[in-house]
Image (cartoon, rainbow over the protein chains, first blue to last red):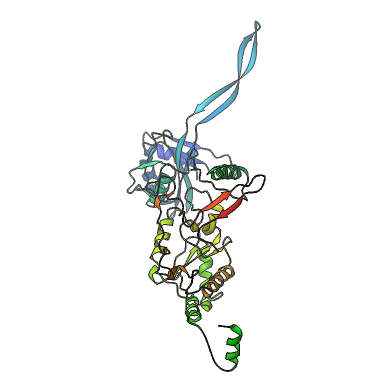
Amino acid sequence: MDLEKIKSEIEAAVPGCSVRIVLNGSPCGQHSLLLSRERAFDVAKFLRDDPELHLDYCSNVTGVDWLDSEVSEKVKVKQVVDGAEQEVEEIRKTRSPGYLEAIYHLYSMEKKHGPLVLRLRTENRTARVSLPSLTPVWRSAEFQEREIFDLYGIIFEGHPDLRRILMWDGFEDHPMRKDYVEPNDYEYEPTAHDVVLEKSMHARAIAGQG
Amino acid sequence: MDPELKIELSRQGIFTTTLEELYNWGRKNSVWPLTFGLACCAIEMIATTMARYDLARFGAEVFRPSPRQADLMIVAGTVTKKMAPQIVRLYNQMPEPKYVIAMGACAISGGPFKQGYNVLKGIDRYIPVDVHIPGCPPRPEALMDAFITLQKKIDAQHLTGADRPRHLNADEPSEFVVPEYGAHDLVPSKNLKLWNIIYKTTPNGPATAGEDGPGKD
């Protein structure tokens, strides 16, 4: 699918929407569109209802947890060293805050084209984790958005029935987040190795004392 | 009764038996399992009941959709923490005598998903298991072997005496604690009456698992 063309069509149809093409460097080359949160719902409606695109089928919704990252790059800077001007390499570190991401894969049953990949990102991964729900546009997103809410903790605003789906209601935390700490309930097992062996030896030491 | 005398009598055309033999013979040849499957092991369980393997030859062709009519629970597949209370409740609703086969790596220990955030580390933490089958998933032959093992176990049960089965002993429990959902795990995380393996550490030697409490097969 020609993403440049779709991008300009979206920007013409939904004023005030920022669309960015996120390139995928891997051999599949499946590039995606990053939408702004505010107008994502209108964009989704446009993509479904536009007679040319007619993306009437949302096959998959999934989540990604991006941690805070630190990118270091080498920059050549001119500095005065011992009275003479020299080029010195300097390492600059830029911190980019993490976010949670929801990804939608769209196809058109009628036009036989797709997939178009949409990305929506939350402001951060702690307090402001809400995104507009696209379930009113594609009904098939309902359970998958519930799953993302359950496992990643993204709050989908406008979802008709946002409850946990895999874990039970009283469960704390979101187990697919990268900083999820599993409860240490290891027991000794003779075939374990590496981390499991370490944890189970600890459990055995406690059991041996008691 | 002396087995040789019994053979001798049967040669003379006299058939002798005991109430215990008749009772166990009847029970072991009509063990009706409960209809339910949890994961891929259930597909093998279904295959076992179909014409090629034909579990009906052993008297288990009728899968009952109600725990009130079932004698055997085949725990076929991964038991998630969310599913475990329902399984224990179904087991509690089955009338005595009742038996459990834990089928596959997941049902006996958690298998490849052990220590997963929503996976129970074996159903024998909550209900007493009669036969464990390893495998991922076990072949239908393995399930049939487990079934025959269970039949042998039923056949060997004595109706009286200290080693009589649980359903003839009024002091033994027939219902087990249904766990509740906690913040991260089930509460309690295991039934200590069933799962009380204490690991003894010996100096300069490997750890040995000492077990006390109800025996397991």
